[in-house]
Length: 353
Image 1: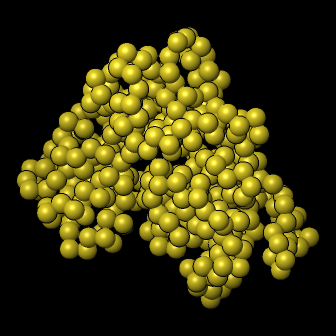
Image 2: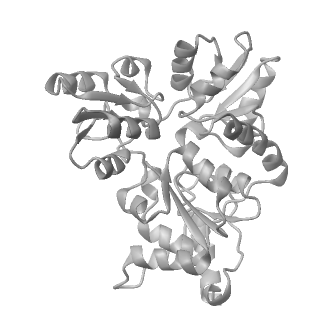
Image 3: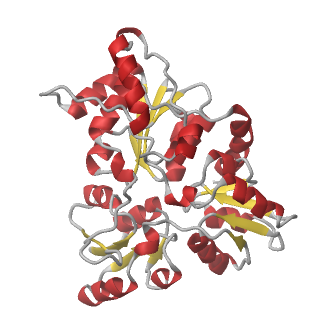
């Protein structure tokens, strides 16, 4: 079930879709049950080609589908744009679409809503939260900031809108190093919520940032032992690691970078085999762009699991994308006062990227 706090932040409006897509009284009644589930729980008509139906709805409704690399392959294939958090934010900021369907986790929907106040933003499932964002409640982070006066507050994009509103500049894994290095060397900095990314940035940027103690439940689980075993089995393979991983894993990397950076490296590298240490959804795009190369997912510590998946990203399924488009629900909204403050550090990030 969806988190009650998030459900308050991400209120689903009962606005009617336009023209022939208006909801019947029966559907309005059913929406009460949808609210308890966090998504439009409606059966897809039998015999419908979901991908074709979704693309047709996009045309009819002037809608765009944005999907993160960590969503399942079918969702990526039906999207207008697939990317990492930075790429998705850029696309949202420049789209002319009336309706944005954000296939990812809730903070991505919030970011779209903040950057596009005149547009409607929906997500397939409100239950698709983010462990990093959840690890950093706004009220606790506010006290943390107040306990360190005189510090510039740098927040990872994997945070709620309320935390972004307390922030001086937002970063992604793709631009964090560049933005940190753009700040004066003697500047005191708070970084949250990912301690692993923060430690990595401290090491490569020569900083001593004060770190919030949060972590991604996916990247925290990667197994050093299993990675070492795979390196022995594939001595010529390049190791691609996301900086949200623990330091012991990062030290074994040939390349450390965002999902987009790892993807670009794999495409350009003469190597033919790669050990991939990030959420396994990225393998879909890697294999799609490089069909002649081999990508091996590094497993987590959990025994019996061959790859490391984000349970929240997997909540974005094709039927839920179809229903989110059809009913234009659940809609993501952000309090106007929060959005007014949160947009500032996001726009600063985009200007520095």
